[in-house]
Length: 260
Image (cartoon, rainbow, N blue to C red; front, side, top):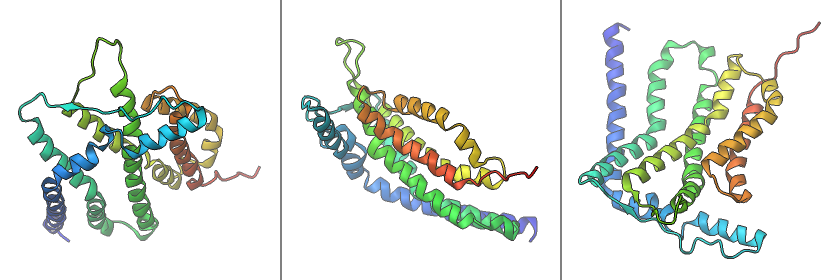
């Protein structure tokens, strides 16, 4: 195929990506009011399932019923005239890109794959499926676990009682997308380890050698994500990340033994 033929194929790929993303964005734009009230702003209310579950668990294990989320709520404010309109548009686009992500990757792969050899294509389809599942699983963990815990802690944190927390809509949305997207990326760790192992840059011995170091680093990371005082909340964030570490070690081949 000529250079212009490749460009024509690439144009078709980009057109399909943009068309599907626009369709998703229009759908999200139309339903954005419902999404904000029932999904995006749901962690601001005390009836969020995670708050109820954690309060019941903490009360059960500690016997302290005073730590409840029955009075927890976050009221957001808008301090710029056009912020709500632009956030309406930007949120629709972000959600469209996230939902269309598997289709985007598939289209890019369809454009690149004819230039690869058969041995280079081997294992890509399972990796594609696994990577998408792990990304959306990470986004779900970020939404249902990490972001609500972070919001609940930071919304109630005060340097002084004379300083009231007034949270802007922009600040809330920035943290919402940053945390959920970050967790989606973190959950790609097993796929990254598998790729590095397949290329020979990583072996299972690495995970065995640095397991103790990893536990300390992951505990610090979990404490940074949810800097709360109770060990139950800290464990709820630490164990999913540690399971990712162990899963990564199982996907990486053992180092070949050299006979002396």
